[in-house]
Length: 274
Image (cartoon, rainbow, N blue to C red):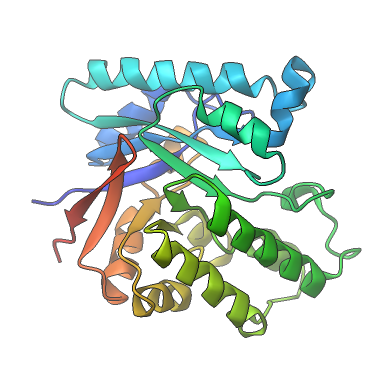
């Protein structure tokens, strides 16, 4: 049986997304997706700012997101499984606040990500003409390793996230061989801790490759990786399910017989059908 999952979806409970959870669910059904996870943004360090955060009150947003996912799962009535998730950003920047974020709900699925390194803006906002890109990437991968080693999560999101903006906005196409040692350490840590690696398909639209690309996914498998999750990183209903089958094909090409969804923080293997 052909089963598709998209386990990286943002609703209007995220500051940068457009559509309600139900609208995202309806798009998933229309695109023959069987399982989704609503993974609205939780930038953990922003919790301390409450309503003063430029991103909004994240405790309220995630509380609403979980409730909306639960309601949607009931309304879908078996047509679609809707999992309660969260994209936990910068979990090691403020560990006490991260614990507070994790206590909001009994999540099914937690993605971990880094959108900015310590004391800098989100990679989206940086002016790359004024940035030392190699140094920025070294700091990013070092923080990602710290996250992989210490954070409480299920899958590591868009491992090569900064490339989305570096490649889009400059003539620089970083050679990731320069960071192969630390990337290997990240992947080995995921294997050791029994964590998943996300294949994020949004990069196909912006820079022509998944995040991470097939080479890194293959390396994860070679190092003993068991779990890969597939996510579109949709921020509007028109992007739900974007290139999900391409993500699954990437997993298969790299030697995975299954992709993974998480319910109640436990991995569930979905056989790749082709």
